[in-house]
Image 1 (cartoon, rainbow, N blue to C red):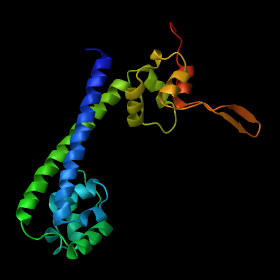
Image 2 (cartoon, one colour):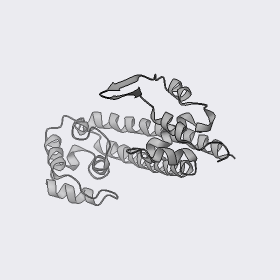
Image 3 (spheres, rainbow, N blue to C red):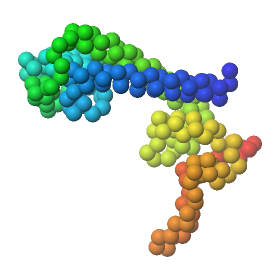
Length: 213
């Protein structure tokens, strides 16, 4: 299998895993909408503390009789959760006390959320593994060195860019990539400097080694 086909296979795998992750997240949110609708007010996204909360105290009744300090101690036991925010813990207590969530069938809801959460964390781990493999593949290419020399570009951005455009050797000049991206060149005039705005990829193409060098 060639490096390109391996990369494409990994990209397809990442795309499928990302879709599955979004699906699991939506299923968790549907359970929360019924039993703890205020959860997403405290945690708009599924960050580390949100996941720790879902693991240890997914429902309002799991939170109401605890202090903020007790919650922080509890969440700190979750792998990867180093510094739970005390302010978030206090907000959780406040919202749990005033929650309008359903109070019947909580045992089943707790089990369903726990099952979905395990699936969510497994998918996150698999996506991280695929991303690491893609980054390692990218580092073996000439394009990686060119892109990595641009301030502010990390591995994730470089991998995404290369997955979209492939090898720069496939293009004769920067305009082909600019057209692919749906962009246009514009003249840039400011003070004493006049010239064309150059795209990131364009700069890399112009700086790439010549054939045979």
